[in-house]
Length: 384
Image 1 (cartoon, rainbow, N blue to C red):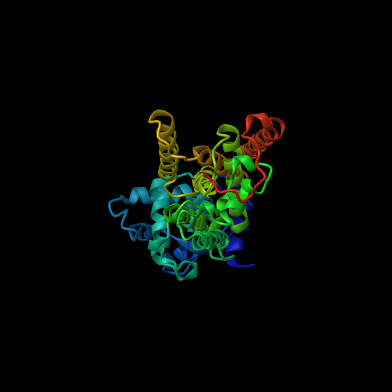
Image 2 (cartoon, rainbow, N blue to C red):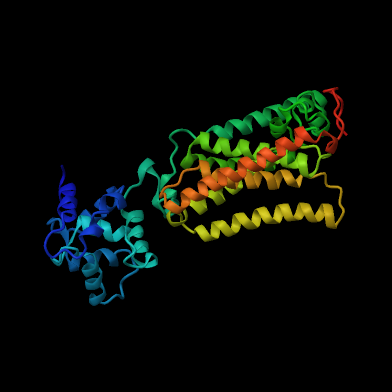
């Protein structure tokens, strides 16, 4: 048992004069990864006595270039609020508890100490701290296991697109041999694979490039925190929800492209923001940006079709369905770094809503064939 573990146990035992013994019993769970803070603590424990005195604490805070103007009384109050055994010093366990507590405003003290870590502690993987966002969520980024699921999906979609382009000699490849089998065709709903495989068909190179850029730029970061299989589940849920939603709301529309899955990846970021709000940097700004991005795109498609009466042939419901699926499935599937009791209710509610909506669209497709265009059985008939 090292010195820090002994100190934690000593504090947890509730020594005479301790301010709040029960509060310190939570130290082990609140300080899951103290390695960075230990290096900070050791750097400023200049006399090596295992505690920080007033002068050392002041020197540490001032080193971040935030606290030069603080009076000595402010430093004394900081120490006093964290000094649970009233010995006038900060032991490492007390220092660590102060780092993770809400005793002081997060915008003040947490910002100061995060600044030390970014400047003094070498992060894993040899990255530079200035290139890494603040926050526990961002510190979870890792290349192990390799984030290759979205990369493989994008590669398959590009290869199939090129095969159709080469076969037809036309970048408008939806009449290629692969596209005609995989595209979602409302006249061939009995070929159930089309509800998923339309994601491999794209209408022109710009359609493909835009989808792939968004997929890779947003999907890979998700994989680095939540691992490939979770992100793949979210992506596929968005694809299926997009086609099923379109089949019910817009039964005569053909679907091609990965937009349903791409929108699921976009709103999966919203899910991570909601479930990891306190662990993320700039959560409110990220939430606003992603919400505006989705609202603008879907809103534009609806306006062009129903207000401006433009023949865009955009299956906006695939975007909306994919986005909704990404949010609901993302909340349930993606990692939550700090689970709270109320969040479990959101998990189950999200899963239940997704299952109910998918169930309704499947039943609708099966039970009301007269609602849909008549079926055609010539698989290779050219598309309109």
